Image (cartoon, rainbow, N blue to C red):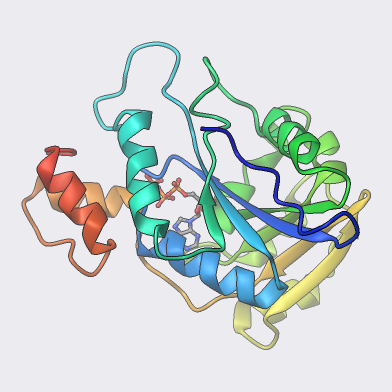
Length: 232
Ligand code: ATP
């Protein structure tokens, strides 16, 4: 399975969202941010991109990429504007976001505008990624609020231009919901969404303790986990 090219026609700009993650497992928080970001930024598609298996010793807590991908497939089956990408799971060894974005831009053609969706917690690590400056010129970053992290923290992040501290505080306090800043050839878009407390680690911990995860996961994902005895 390869990701198809998602051009609407030769002339129309395609707005393609990329949501990468371990998806260990995919949960309602992921689906909520994908739906809400698609609506807020008028994205045509969102590609869910699970990470591949780690190159060395398999981790006890990380389900195999095959299972994590299958759970994503089940979770998004009813939503035609969501798609699963195997760009990272099909590649041996560790994948770097910069390579993934370059490949997806190539596959989608020059009419595609790429938006890299990421939780604020994860974006704070961005300066340590491979070729972060190239990435800022390849796609727009959509940094999504996550409980426990404040947008104000972005002002201390290297590699970004000076950010308007007052506007970041306005985002944190809920006085505004979107802040768009030109960065490189693209944009940094900060998006405040209704908070979702769900995390995959919380889901795994509850499964380990034999507690219900019914309102944290789409039902087919919950069934898959039970059937395959994942995270026990
Ligand atoms: P874990 O708890 O194992 O660290 P996770 O719940 O953060 O996992 P990931 O697959 O690592 O899930 O997340 C993929 C992306 O989705 C990351 O950018 C993460 O910040 C974002 N994300 C996940 N859950 C939420 C949430 N509840 N609200 C906002 N962003 C989220």
